Length: 166
Image (tube, rainbow, N blue to C red):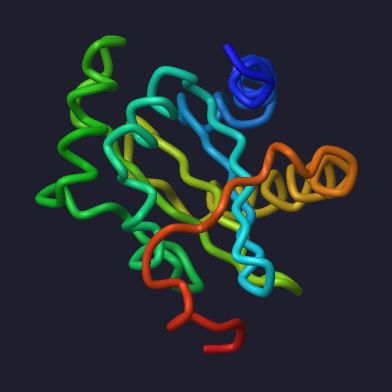
């Protein structure tokens, strides 16, 4: 196994602990963080489930990320290919009909996205707590971006069409 995948396994373990301590009280049982640098065409991801990360990448689902990078909060459409694949994966860990949500913020170099799964539709106070957690995670990610550039991936898909400020 290469260095990248060893690091992804460690990051997944960290994300499991982080989610349990910061978000499980909100009914959130899964969380992924991503940072997109559109100027360098790079992507950093902190997955919670290493197996989902591998499946996601192997099936080329990352090519659809561009369609999800819209500022704001967006629940996943249950009829999309990515939701169906995620739902099939998460059912293997005894979660059924998850509410999957992207929270996308504009960042200096592109975007940040926190994707969470919960057992219910979230309420406004819960969104506020998630936004705070996202800012904390963003602060934790910054030194990793600077000190471990080998963790970043090349963006695939039609990224040239998307620019910060759109």
